[in-house]
Image: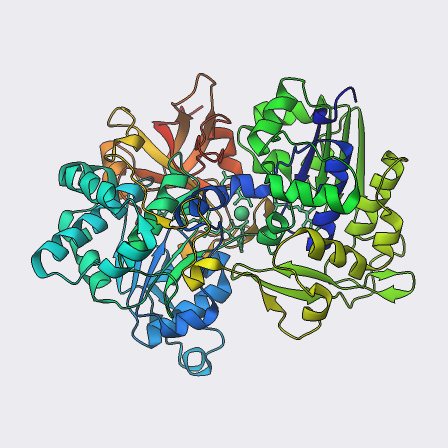
Length: 613
Ligand SMILES: Nc1nc2c(c(=O)[nH]1)N[C@H]1C(S)=C(S)[C@@H](COP(=O)(O)OP(=O)(O)OC[C@H]3O[C@@H](n4cnc5c(=O)[nH]c(N)nc54)[C@H](O)[C@@H]3O)O[C@H]1N2
Ligand SMILES: Nc1nc2c(c(=O)[nH]1)N[C@H]1C(S)=C(S)[C@@H](COP(=O)(O)OP(=O)(O)OC[C@H]3O[C@@H](n4cnc5c(=O)[nH]c(N)nc54)[C@H](O)[C@@H]3O)O[C@H]1N2
Ligand SMILES: [Mo]
């Protein structure tokens, strides 16, 4: 390639720390910071927003905190399907009578009532536990307004009764509170109600519950991040928690629920298009080459470069890049126009089949398979949502003797592509302890890495906010202002609905395992649109009618035709359809400008009755 920046290095969050570290080392010695990754479509709002607020882009709670919490706010995630272990934790909390307040446009059954498969009595008696003590069906994209409403309610309580804000914490640990308070003051309830779809009383009630709790946790997922205000949403959650000092005390904190098993670890070990100067300097010192300093492409930018013919090569460490991104009619042809694509995968998928001038599909060892290097079984490491790093080793006999591990393939490619490399690639993969030694020397928090992963359970990476240390430029936690609620206000006509794209029970991202979505009561099909009875009526539609869905925020003609509407408990003004089928409706450039994530959960659409042939 004339320039290394014509190559894109995509990572899906399943790769181990060891594979991901080698992958970023390969790309950086090759000469680029182009690291589109699944995080750019997922929790990027967390990675960008939280450091501004609390100095680090990760969750601050541990499992033990859930045992001591007095209130849980669960916003924009569907743990019954997507985070079964968190569902167990919520179930336990609910049984201890901890109030759980849910904000979700859809009535998600497992968040209303849930039977824990681990609970013998519930299983034997077909009983279940009520999970949400309060369920607020916020409008799609209405969380910023709702969060501001709760904070405004809190200020009113403070004025009326005092002792609601943690004044001492605010004075010692934060900055920016007065500006936040002034903005909340200036934001009219009328706007908050309109944008959130919730009444003032409903938000005041949440504020009152919050004011009573001595330790609060906020959990959240894609319902917060996949919006054009995603990054602001995340900062507003931090604001809410800061107001009552809910960091650095037992039972309190922020809990972004991650997706892929090691997406957080991938970022920690250097998969980022915006590396810090310190990290790059560390690589240079350790390996003796000069890494590129300019920031690279995220997922949408990488695809845009491919569409424009600027990017010529794409190397994918897992994932289903073209199917996970918006607007397949735009993205799929761009895959075929590449000179080279390389896919390391465990399962053949559609992106692999969008063949470029030259395409290599390289099957890799799965996580459960035995990985032997030089006769010695290897283990890899991963980091979970609670910043716990632990080792894991596959035990099963590999499906084929020809399968190689991800680290071995990445190292093999790097070795072959860069004969003058400063890195002893083959030496590193001969023993993964050597890769971990390099991680230890270049990534903070991994002291005695190899010793500590040999302790069962592993170790926790440092999380300064849990000790009330703030690694922000000012050394304080920062309240941020989201002016008015208008930031999110786009003057669409009243018949415009907000489309949410969601996962069903029988899928894992782009892999569809079956056609059922059992908690939502949809069986045998996925070509449906969830719609509120009021919206059905105003559109002159009935449950079971066929409709066409059309996106209005773009010049491109984005349409999904002949979809069956189903009446569902979803907030008025919001509709929902399944990902990835509905990606034909998502514009590639309709993104959160702060973090680049497509607004997969607030696409302005119009619904029309299908023409019957
Ligand atoms: N079985 C299974 N598990 C998975 C996955 C999978 O596909 N299948 N995917 C993994 C990955 S990569 C991820 S990122 C996670 C995703 O897990 P989640 O974060 O739960 O993601 P979604 O299924 O997209 O659902 C988001 C939830 O947010 C709600 N929501 C939508 N819009 C809004 C809004 O504007 N405001 C609020 N408050 N709520 C909203 C939806 O109704 C839905 O309940 O799950 C991971 N786990
Ligand atoms: N409309 C809409 N679009 C979305 C979303 C949404 O909510 N709505 N969610 C977004 C989110 S949160 C995410 S994370 C992305 C997901 O984007 P991706 O991570 O790119 O997609 P996946 O479907 O998880 O990728 C599955 C493929 O990964 C490969 N694979 C699985 N395990 C391994 C492994 O251990 N090693 C290797 N090398 N390969 C493996 C398999 O070949 C499999 O086919 O999609 C995003 N797209
Ligand atoms: Mo994700």
